[in-house]
Image 1: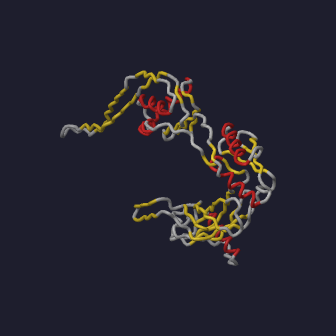
Image 2 (image 1 turned 45 degrees about the vertical axis):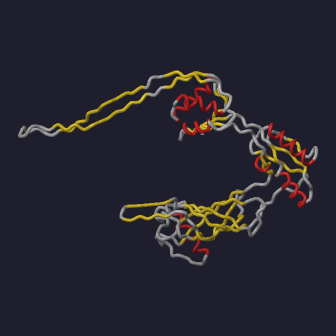
Image 3 (image 1 turned 90 degrees about the vertical axis):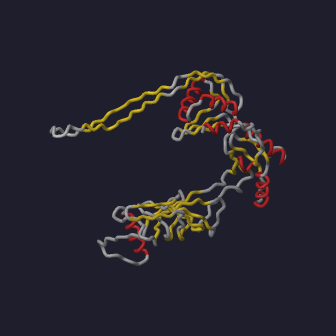
Length: 363
């Protein structure tokens, strides 16, 4: 990570460039809707659920057979090896119409070893309101392979999740309020009053004054034509407008699990002094065998001999000069010579001391 920061330090600071409005904002009401369903995958090569540990798989098979007119005698204990209970997920795109095909993800929810070669049976896909919006069925494609024999096992990629391209058919459309009023609402991806003001100015320059007005730092109201064809053309031209966004607020993102540190161009550093040193403790244990003399009647004894070593690097205080650009900040941090994990604590201390001019976020 330190090496990556060194590389970043050598890069010149790039000016903020214009972006298309479609990359900065979205139209209110134009959104995806998540769908979920519970189903069965059959045709597995002995890699399905162990029915003694997943009773819901057996219950699902029995219920499906009853709907198909097959009634099993009471008390029958099914021992299935080629069936797996799965969850089917997908997203319903905006303006989707009945008959449209969707890709689906099939994920095992039991203890099936693999879904490779299986076939997903007809599965209804429901939305958050409990209504059915699609039906899924098809052959599951798993992007992995595995084999096991004699206690040895090898596996490439994941075998419990697969995809079905075009495996779901839309059965119901979701109504949208896009054309029910004389105005639409643009929602910025990131709330920023400066960017919202620039978007309003760009829209009014393109389509005339009073076309757009900022409602707050995120929502912008735009007057649009009433006709559907004119409105679609208007939105197409609206999304293509170039807007130069305002510089983002200074932020440092730290991942405490991996030690990664990412900072944006707006981060600056005030002059400060940092003391850094490491303390390490190493303990080695070696077995020592005590062998008695011949014919002495003694017993062999095994003992442990431990060696403890404490190493402490001499602490040093380094003066970090104020930095007004990301390159200078990176250069100052690399001068400390700290590991990524040490850098997390140093940045937190800098923030507490008021030397780090940025918002600190730990993920």
